[in-house]
Image: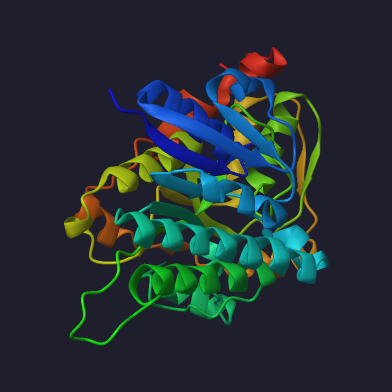
Amino acid sequence: MTMKRALITGACGEIGQALAQELAKKGGYRVVTSDIAPLPDSIKGLTAEHVQGDLVYKVKVFYDYDFDVIFHLAASLSSKAEIATEEAHRINVEGTMQLLMLAAYRSEKYGKPVKFLFPSSIAAYGMPTLDAKKSAGAVKEEDWVSPHTMYGCNKLYCEKLGIYYGKYFGQKHLDEKPPVMLDFRALRFPGLISAFTLPSGGTSDYGPEMLHAAAQGKNYACFVRPDTKISFMAMPDAIKSLMTLMDAPCEKLTANVYNVAAFAITAEDFRQRALKAFANVKVTFEPNPRRQGIVDSWPEDVDDSRARKDWNWKPDYDVDRFFEEYFLPEIRRRYGRQGRG
């Protein structure tokens, strides 16, 4: 069997580790990873090669590789990007553009489209007021795309870059045969939660942070208001969506950018789950103005009907199954607490 060749950038992050494990489970892939950090033990034996270092300066190394698919996960996330905006732009935009140029070059030169999977984010949206956020409900991909953060601006712009390199780069006279273009596919993820890796301080991590603290018998001061509501998704569903979109026939796709959703709940909902699951814990709310402002700019939920229609997207974990079958059992094992009931 001919092995397909895949590159995962940002492989040491939560999505990267889970994706490397899923590709190994699926089989048929020779996986090369890239990250500024060394590979964690969880995926050390699953990759053919790891390229460590700053991606912006390492991309040139990959011009000698014949990748069938690139998963570009490396990014500076929302909270950090607000503090170091120039560095975030360098990582998020320059790194992405360098990889898109590589994929476009190889697609045209060898006459075979390289698939480019790009995890985007609900940060690409920007709700002007809380009233607008509440009344908007589940937003479509084309609505409210006026991000309030550097991270959101970076993600939205990189979606546009991907569409450019996938449709218009190297464009010729209309009567001439167009060059072979890269195959760009983007997913706008909600807040992602993994049961197997610790929260990394992301802006949407107040929910899992709260439950990890409760599982350890620690009090937690939540950095957003109790009524704060956004969409979330279990990590297995995030990986499922990436793999399903990767395998979807090109002719079935009506867009380059797709929302995916699972469940939308409030910070108070997370608190109630924590109190129900673990005894003798205290959760308070101490909103951080900067982080609260970021989350307030994101929609309460997203409309993923386009993904459901084009490539049969459907999450495996609704809110109850997420907590009872996926998240809570694992953190109970992690911390040795059985919890209530």
